[in-house]
Length: 221
Image (cartoon, rainbow, N blue to C red; front, side):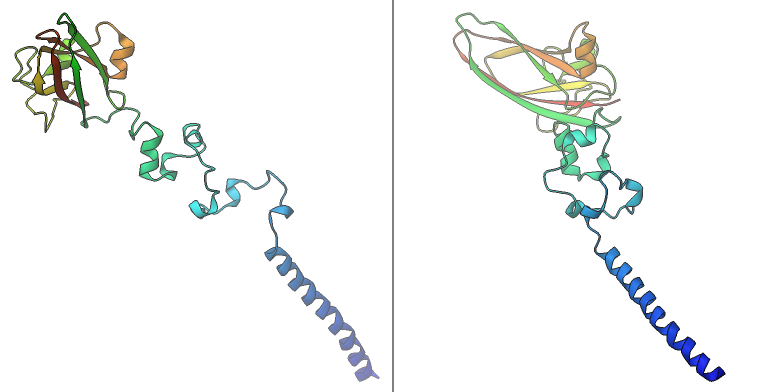
């Protein structure tokens, strides 16, 4: 009688064990099949995602814009170097790092009017200077120019250089022009802080083709 009771109890337990195993397997399958439809909107946060696990392949093409970086949603480290530069007008900086030299070039060709006159052209650094450009001494011509020459501007048109805190201008290939003079904007804090500077020159003769090329360099102090 005892042996019969033992067999009855075991046979009763087995079906329940099978039910539990099937239920467990079903739960695992269900978990593996969860999709966005089963997740309530705005409930998954960055804390639920493993750091460094998402890549560009996980983000919809064309969905990330410069504004997402500038408003703080993303950091510069989330973008490749080429994209960072494109977001800030081809410059990776807001302010030029100390000790860094930036350079640029410019060319003009024009026919002078009936009366030879003077001209002024403005330029701006590709990013904010580390210190404002203030006073005529902040922007000078190469050391071989007859006007506004600065011995510290010892580079060349092909290899422009500048001492710390200054802009040096290098003129090349002139025709019918003279009197070159570089300077910062006078008494204008906005332009000084923005790294804007000007070049002045005069025509030698009226009704004549004038031309020259210019290279400049600036080194952040």
